[in-house]
Length: 278
Image (cartoon, rainbow, N blue to C red; front, side):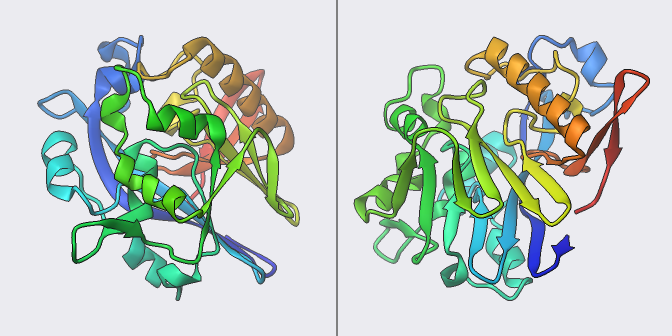
């Protein structure tokens, strides 16, 4: 989407597979499988979506996908088909050195794995060497000391090298990154999880992250089983959907696969989803 001198685009790092029960939580399989078909191991395919915001002043990347450090391991466990972010970035005429800011909605591997890569010695080093990485401090605190429920979702070498080099800006709540690009905490899915609001000209776009990971999660009760605080997720999702309907916001879904973005309209008192390709 081009808005004056600003370009906003979805960049896919690829896809991965996740257990359908985890993806849809309390929703019975007989209900959710009418919308998305699982494989023989009951896994559904999800997207690894990042967002590139190109302005005359700065190039901002939101999330970095799963990266390339443990492709074989993640391919076996999650059916990972990834490591496409850098190639897609190149299609917009950019290299890793052209990224000024990386906003991370959270630090689980599907969002932060592409922050670092392995050098010739096997050490993890930043992929975007000139970027400032923007993370909620609560998110960082959870990632460096996860509890037993979530410890398999974090890999310290995705983000620790950034802190070692003083490349992280820690936030405490809502903050404007540049004029028209604001992050806001929606920490139902995980502590310090943040959504990104983009306002340029008459366009309003929100990256919902894991608060509404796919279009299938627009119904309020569709909440993933790994949501850390499901009741808070419910309330925050309701508020975001109401905001999107009232203000005409385009929603980008962090894990949408076949459909990654769209509008939600009020039709006779009920939300209606209108997919839009971005």
